[in-house]
Image 1 (cartoon, helix red, strand yellow):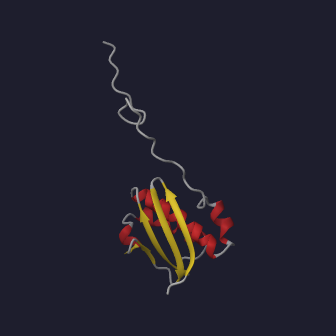
Image 2 (cartoon, helix red, strand yellow):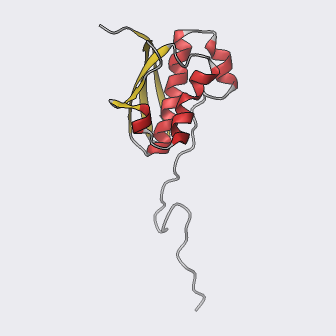
Image 3 (cartoon, rainbow, N blue to C red):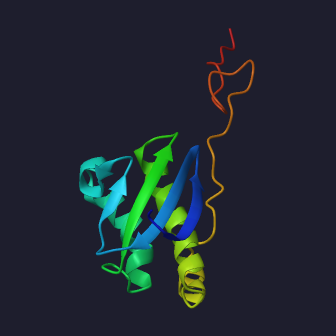
Length: 130
C-alpha cells in the first residue's frame, strides 16, 4: 500500500490534474509516462517543476499525476497548480513561498465563448456598405 503525503487538484483552462505526492527520490509520472516523455517541450516541464524548485524539494518526493482535458499548455498549468496545493498539504511551511510566487492562485482565464451571429467570439462578418 502506497501512502500519499499530499493530494492536490489543479485546474487551468479546461484541464484538470490530480496530483499525488509520495515519499521517494524525485521521480515524476504523468498519466503513466515519465514527465519528459509526456511534456516533450522543456518549457512545460519547467512550468511543472517550478513549485518543487521554490520549496527545495526536487529529490524528496515521488509525484504521480493524472491529467485530462484541454491542451498541453493548460495541462502543464493544471499540474503546477495541483502540485503546489499538494505541497501545502505535505508541509505548512511551503504555503508562504508558494503563495508569494503565485502558484496557489488558479489562473481563471478561459476561452471566450462564440456568440451567435458571429464568426468567433468577437469576429464580425465583413462589412459591405454597398
